[in-house]
Each structure stands twice: as structure tokens, then as C-alpha cells.
Image (tube, rainbow, N blue to C red; front, side, top):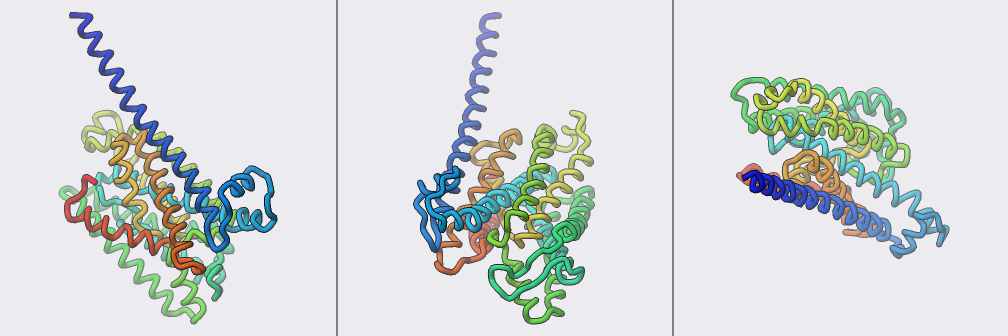
Length: 360
């Protein structure tokens, strides 16, 4: 009898190891695919560069002075920005969906992106934290990124507080919270249009262009700031991963396990709002990445946040990088804003989730 029990425990242990090893395999495969896509994305454009020459340039072996300038000054910052921004939006979405227990939660659907966009526009046009131009390449240049980010974060945090306040009412369903988010998004979109109404022609054209999310407008300095805040936030989310797993089982279960649900929810929403604010402040509104990617990752690696957080980040990076690459070559020599393609992809998926496919 003892041997039989020991044998069952050994089988369970072996099955668990196989189960987790598959998840690690998926994550490693995603990282490899992301690296391959990075090289491919750098190599194509108005000037095609062979992939092997791209690898040699990135490893410090200059093949061509012209190619070296294109890679280091133009394409590499854009590609890395797409990877970091996609990861930041995706991890914000997966945490919001967990702590709110709402499969439709994301910075875009909850109105946080629109609030941050209004805050950034307010800082640029009213507080003078940026300058506007009529050229496509630099429609808005942020001269004071810290003030712009703080203002964008303040408005994003205001929407976060409203969402959390509604989540505390008994009987409030996930659908109601989404409707509140839609209302907040509409409110701050109207606020942005109000600012645009009083802008001159150049400011209006620049601000309309800026609201189309685009990763090509970030330089190395903006990339460093976005990466620093996103990395710190991801580390915090990973440290809290067990608590998110507990909350997925229900608030009462989580409290029974010693989790301070209210504190975890507040801190998680604040961190997710900060990441959203910094991305929107520099890149504009990029919709649906935070909504779609967590669900795609769940289909592959499950609901365990030990793996889901990293998997969602990889999925977000891949999605935004692929969309940015397609936007760059779709109507060459012109470049579409990447938010156009993410919205085309996200809209039908969002409708599918609403109509009952929430187990995507």
C-alpha cells in the first residue's frame, strides 16, 4: 500500500515537471521567434539590408557606413520600442484582467489610455512641455518628458480610481466596469477634442497625428525611459504573481490565504496605469494589444501567472513588432501608424469576446 502511494506521488511529480517544462519550452520558443522577427524587421524597409549584415552590424562589425547609420539611428530604436511597448501594454492588460477578474480588462477598454492621452495632450499644449511641428517625422517633440508623464499618469490614475471605486460595489458585474471604462474613454476623448478645437492649424494637425499611436517617433532617450519604468513594473508584477493566482480563485479565497486583496488591486492598477501613461505620453494611443495578447497567451500556457506574465509580454512584443513591420512596408515608401493595424486586428477580436468567446 505504501509503495502504491509512493508510486502515485512519483507519477504526479513527473506529470507536473512535464507540464511546467512545456510552458518553459513555449516561452523559450517565443523568445527565439522574437529574436528572429527582430532581425527580419530591421532588415526590411525602403532600404533592404541582408539579415546576415544586420547581425554583423549589431555585433560591432561595420559592413557599410550607410547601413550602420540606418540600423543604429533609425530601425533599431524603432524595433526595440515596439518590443518594449508591446510588452508593457500586454503585461498591464494581464494584470488588470486578473485583479479586476474581468476578461475584457485592458488599458484601452477601461479608458486609461484615453485619459493618459488627454493628460499628455494637456501637458504639451497648455503646460508647454512639448513643441509641435508640421512634419510627419516629429509631429510632437516632448521637451519635458517627466512633467508630461506625470500629468498623463495623474489622469490615468483618476480613471483607475473610478474603476476601483465601482469594483467595490456589491453586484457590479465585469460588464458594468467595462461600460464605466467606455464612458471614461469617451469623456477624455471629448476633452482631447476640446483642446484641439482651440489649437491653430499646425497644432491641430500635429495633435491629430500624434493620437495615432506610432513607435517610430521614439528615440534612444525615450526608449530608455519607457524601458526603465516598464522593467521596474514587470519585476513588481512577477513578485506578486502568487497573489494574482490567489485572486483568480476569488476574493474570499485570496483573503483566506492571507492576501490583502484591496492593497494588491490598488498597487497593481497604479503600476499598470503608470506603464500605460509613459507609453501613451511618447507613442500615442495603441489599442487592443493589452486586451488580445493575454488571452492569446492563456490559450498556449494557461492561467498560472508564473508563466502567463512572461508569456503575455512575449506575445505583446511579437504582435506589436509584426504590426509595426507590416505598417512600414504595406504602402512603401509611406509608413502607416502602427495603431491602425492593431485596431484592425483588435476590433473583431473584441467583438468576439463580447459576444461570448471569453474563453479565448
